[in-house]
Length: 348
Image 1: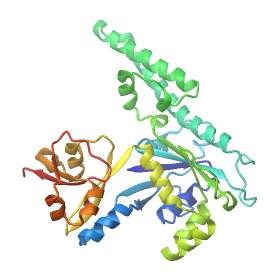
Image 2: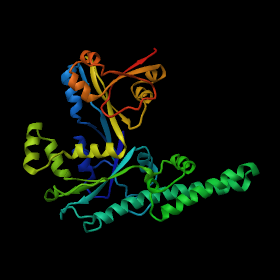
Image 3: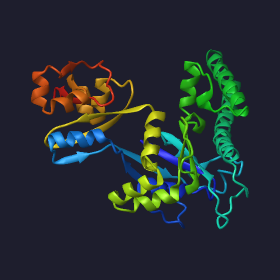
Image 4: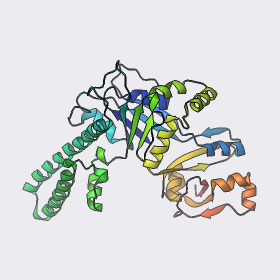
């Protein structure tokens, strides 16, 4: 899973990136920076205690710090070229909104206004999508002039569909909030439009706003403080967080919200060699989950031996779980649940 961080200049976007990935970025570089955050899941710690594996593999999230281009974000121009290509490949986007005062680092608009800044960023995504849709409509109109009669109907239909999408975008309705029929959604999907992507807002706050309430699609992080805490030993981190009233790290908050935003869950594979967490989309079948491990397992799928996490913890040993009848044999259509522990049987 790749999540792209975007933000206006001086929003503290790179500080957020450094805080959640423990990766320091060369401030003079105009290139993207990539960092990986391991997903802290207490369930995997419990499973490790049971199986004492040689290897522990936690789920990971890749964060990409996307530089602010003078020709794109915040300048009312279409995002294009390298920046567009990077944004298009992201699974989700995080907009970092400045909500801290620092006279030494003036805001590009001179004042702090989180609604204005968020609106500016969202409009840039929409404007980029409009440019792509416009070009497609222009090309279709050109094709229509020389098209055979049997092709004209489908071309006209797509023009009508995209014109409707365009009108909604012009009214500042992002793709993800448009009520598209199946055919239109499939057409739009091919363009990798930015406003179609799940979007999470991160308010980069002052220390005195630490207790700022989060919402479904917005979280608050004091990036500078989180960066400093991340550099401390874990015991010191916990002590300082407790003294400041911070119940959860910024990294964990962001990952948890990202999982919810993308509708993701985890399942586990266990054994003496390795305990590993796998990230899948909720509603994924056992067959599809097998494919996340290896395509050969998916191709040769026979059955999945499955036990729920809580049942495994209570049984303590796999042999005891089998004795109690808690292990189930599931077919390829079985829908995986969050926390399932699975062993896939397949033809080699």
